[in-house]
Each structure stands twice: as C-alpha cells, then as structure tokens.
Length: 346
Picture 1 (cartoon, rainbow, N blue to C red):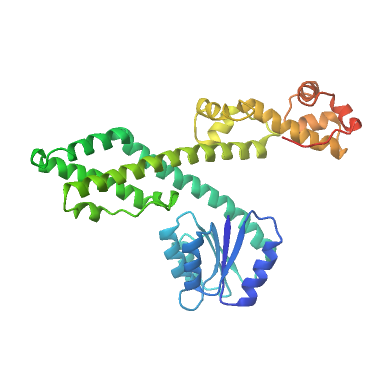
Picture 2 (picture 1 turned 90 degrees about the vertical axis):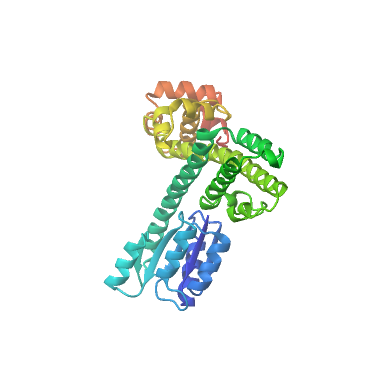
C-alpha cells in the first residue's frame, strides 16, 4: 500500500512522514507532495490507497484535489488536515465524502488511529470496486455467450464476402464491440495489463475496410478474454486473503466455515472449494491450524495454564485441545516447552 502526504508546509509533511515511517502501518511507500498539483501528478503515477492532504494549498486546493482523485481512483481514502476551523471547509469535506477531517496542530496518536481506519476502508472499497467490476464483465458474458463464442460468431460473419454482409448485422457487431470497450474503459480494466494498446469505440466506427474492422474487433476480444482470466484469478486470491484474515482475527471465537463464508459474501460450499486448493484442504482444518499456532505461542510465553490457553484459542475443552496438539506437534502441550521445540508456526 502507498500513502501520500500533501502539504505546502515542508516541515509539516516531512515531520509527519518521518514519524509514520517508523510505525508499522502497512505502507510500502510514504510519498510527499508540496502542493495540490504535484499531489495530483504523484497520485496519477502511483495510485496511493490513502492520501493525507492540506486544504489550503497553492495551485490546486485540497478540495479540488479530492474531487479529481475520486473521479480517477474511487478506492482512494482521503483525509483532510487543516489549520482552519471553518464550517464551509467541513461542509465541503462532507460533500466530497472525505474520510476524516483533522485540525492542526496534528495529534499524532489521533492521526495514527485514523490511518488504521483508512487502511481498513481502503480494503473495503477495493473489494467493492472489484466485485462490481467483475460482476459487470461476468454478467455481460453470461447474458450473451462465452466471449470465445461471441468472437467466433462475429469474426466469422465479418470475414465473409462483403457483398453478403447485412448492414444492420455489421452495425450490431460494431455496437457490441463498442459496449465491451465501454466496460473495459469505464471499469478501468486496462490497468490489469498495461501492455495492451488503448482501443476506442471511435476507432471501430472509423474503420475504412472490412479487414481493419476484423482486426480491431478481434483485438478487443483478445483483450477481454485475457482480462476476464486475470480478474477471475485475482478475485479468488482476494476471497482467500479475506477469509484467512477473518480467521486470524476471530480464531478465539466459536467460528466455522459458515461464519467465514458469510463475511466473504459467498456460500460455504464455494469457500470450501477454494480452500481445497490450499495446503490444509478445508476451512475447519485451517481454523484449527491457526488456533494451534497461537496456542504454541502462548505455551512458550509461559504465562498461562493449559485450560486458559485452550479457552483463549477457541478450543471447546482442554482434553480436545491436547488431542489436536499431539496430532500436530507429536507431543503433549505440557512437554513441548521442556523438549526445546522451536515455534516456527505454519
């Protein structure tokens, strides 16, 4: 993840960056910009997940910056900072759906708290955007036919004799290809693979020969097939990441595959199918593995009784915990620390 800090006061942005760099906030990069114009350029190049920006800046204000960025990157979470306790500024922030408004001088503890919330919000927006994007393409394919079939049908027609072509049919084919391009461009599918050349519906309409039209539409279908494959793989990966994160946060509770599936917005059967590709083969086995790993950590801390560890890690009883522990680590929990076994986790 990338964080961008925009403020025309150098000491403010640099101090903020230096402090945040030493905190584990989950950012791979923390970038800075000296005004709104530079912030927009940095945002367009790096597409940061979170932006902290001053409101009053030369060239481009924080309000103008937020408006432009939200049109280009709707998943970006924007936090306003300002030395002005002005009702109109606050109202503009609300109208722009800015995530938070923080007054200067900045309380670092408060800022860190807001950043943690902003990171969570960014993950949520990405999931929503991706689900919308994927569903749009998937619905299009389901309503008509598999992309390969559409491609084959259209190119077969277009590759025939020009005198045999029906003008209305060619118009329909051009319209369908234009619709595909609209979805690709509006949903920003092109960002999945920047190596593809940009195509435009105007380019289709301006094709002067049948060969140009065949080539143009063939390229569109090649493009869309690749993007759907990439989108499918990414969607499965995101679901598994969300499921594993949920289990990691709730392993101490009485959770099962149904709870994890509900959180991910899919059926338990579909989730089980995805987990069958992982080393632990099933959701219950993965939950147990996470619980046992945390239990092992607690054993090595030496602060807890086995009964406490079993309860804190989500096991129904100490006996059941011990049985699973022996099966996983080859010894009783009480003997593990004495044996000098290393806790290397999963």
